Image 1 (cartoon, rainbow, N blue to C red):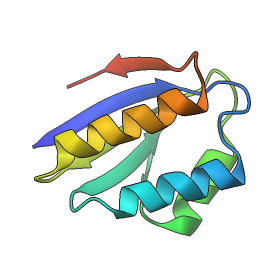
Image 2 (cartoon, helix red, strand yellow; image 1 turned 45 degrees about the vertical axis):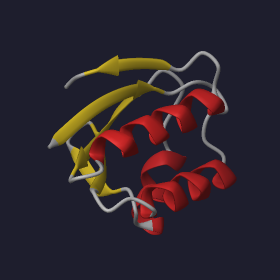
Image 3 (cartoon, one colour; image 1 turned 135 degrees about the horizontal axis):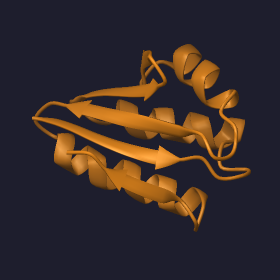
Image 4 (cartoon, rainbow, N blue to C red; image 1 turned 90 degrees about the vertical axis):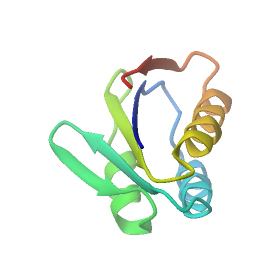
Length: 96
């Protein structure tokens, strides 16, 4: 099952520590975890790809997490919780 969920970046949402924590969380899932920003899609379990994508996100920009696999629903819950903790004002747009 594929799940897509969009998020909007808030000021200070992504520090290097937060990005590394997100990669660690993503790596704990069996499903594929990708991030799409504009037309670029990266493997969200990859340190270099994820750092490169998130470090340049600006406040107000939107990105989409794409989950595909057996534990996608569980991964969606965990990732959503992670983003909610990073910014109390995180906007979540459900796509799927």
